[in-house]
Length: 202
Image (cartoon, rainbow, N blue to C red; front, top):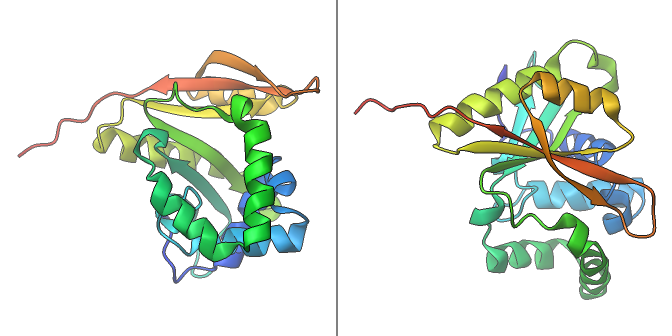
């Protein structure tokens, strides 16, 4: 079954899957166990990009989440409410350190060009890889986004992950820009897929 997450799900597993697929999170949130706890706290809330409301889960059987997809609209974020969520999940010192790190990444992380739904994370548990779960999650969010009248899907893929880039190209995504990480040879391709609009019968 593929569906949106709820607060009744195993949020620790969801947080772990997010952590394992995001290279920036260790830099932002710290070491593995600490970072997963912080992500779990954010997942349980409603007004930040990691919220359960933005997460689709793949659950082939009850209480067995094997994959997640996190997607949100950068244009519809409520910055004030998001800050409130972070202030409840982090201490003052942690927030200051996080703000400084985000400031450093701001030019690379700029999402002002994104006018549709941004797929931030796609993660499949190591025990379930190779079964097309990632493709199924993308298909689900594509149908949902079209029904919600989003005109496009966006995502980023690292330069050193050609396998994933090829997969997304097969899904209809095309490269629209490239971003270089400061003081590094690494970076990522920003990819976009235009969506067909679904006419809702009234």
